[in-house]
Image (spheres, one colour):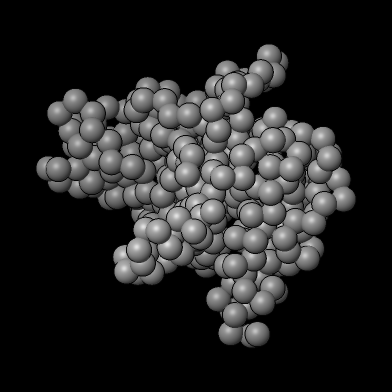
Length: 318
């Protein structure tokens, strides 16, 4: 038990909050480049990968330069890498404004234009732009490593849950606006987004989807680190259901199913608990919102599939 609890570390909201707030802002800088890419249903084009050392953008192919941006949380720097050269931007002892200025200077040296907007998004109370955010920040390597470990562990479970889905499913990754790690399943069923929501949110809700993820700030009014899930549009009949893991509950006020991190890390197998949590949410979508059960194929490892006749896999699916 103790070895597993060490692998799934305790996360203290008060300890992590300053770093979460800082990283949420700076990942939006390179995140803006994802908006230059074609829009993918549910904003699948914008997610940042959880890498072996932090968070990374997809590969951008913009005009005559191909590049990636890697926020190396375990190293305290950002690496901008192109087909020609690379630049490194430190993260210690800077404000968001100074980081943005240094980042844009380094990007320009590599032939990369600055992001087309510097607006800070989805962070209540934040200054309007990166240039306006002059609060001094300190880099906490311990908190950065805890953040990466949590996202890396959660990503492994979410990828296992997502693997057998046969419909549209963007890769598992961090949505840099709300700073949540997301695994989303879509179906081609048009919906009516709320008219009073921001444009980006309306475009996120053009079709029905089921979202399961991890966040350091599930509930804005109080500390809540852990897994979340919801079904869009939200159906009736979610109250009183079982959510696959003891301790997972429906929060009607937030419209979320919540599985607190402290509950998750104390389960017998947290990785499998994430899969069970996601499966229970999808089953709720089948039973309450008419989602097709046959959109989920067999869940087997790649080696098994490589030596098993297709007919056997079809029987598993059926």
